[in-house]
Picture 1 (cartoon, rainbow, N blue to C red):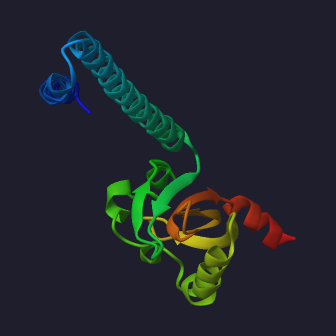
Picture 2 (cartoon, rainbow, N blue to C red):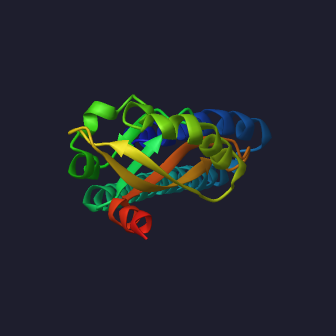
Length: 193
């Protein structure tokens, strides 16, 4: 609630109690007038304290959420790995600046698209269903290797870790958090052996 709402709720509560209680009290006895005023003051104080506490709690939660998001962005934007958020269908919602550093594309170019736009054709055919079933069958993370096309046309090898983000009550996958690391040099050394 806003501070204005807090004041309005408190005033309406006091007015409501002030009208209802005296009617009841006047029917009972005149001695209750002092008690009714004390009761109105006590209830009004409790209402104001409750509403103020709710306001502070909501404000604290909002600040905590904003701080958490700020820290996540700070990590993602300074990472040498590509960090992304996608829908369960693979549509990219966010991708870190490392996307440009490693692959030469502006991050905005891929937002709203899928990784298929830059994936090696063999990886799409061979790994597509394996990746999807792996992600949906795990409760933790799923790791796979694949190639992405650099803006210049050559391909780089990546090791990607996908973590499903699940709804706390239904366990349904809401989105995927993905981290992709360039392993091209390691892959070339392995092939050379």
